[in-house]
Length: 115
Image (cartoon, rainbow, N blue to C red; front, side):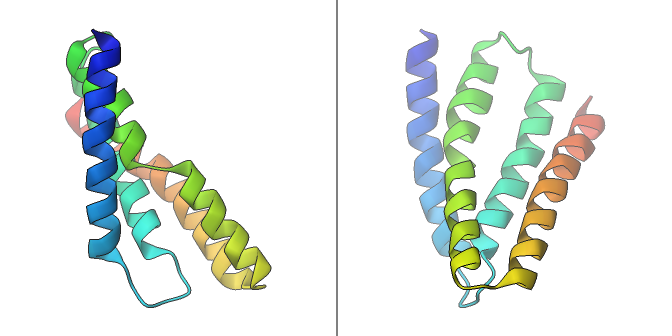
C-alpha cells in the first residue's frame, strides 16, 4: 500500500513541480523557480514532520511521494553546474547560500509553527 501512495504522491508532485516551475520562471541568470519550489517544499515538509506521524499513510503520500517529487536536488545540481560553466561566481554563491540556508530555515520555521 505504501508503494501505491508514494507513486500517486510522486505523480502529483511532479506535475505540481512542472506547473510551479512554469509559473515562477524568470528571464534571469538566477534560478528563481527551483529556489522557490525547494523553499516551499521544505516549508511543507516541516509541516508534515510537525503534524503527521512518520508512519502514517498521509506522511508517506505527502512527505515521501508528493514532496519528494515536488522538490528536486537534481535540478539544483544542474543549475549550479550551469552557473559554474558560465563562471557566474557571485550568482552561484548566492544561489547555494539561499538554497541551503533557506530550505533549512523554511523547514525549521514551519516545523516549529505547526508542532
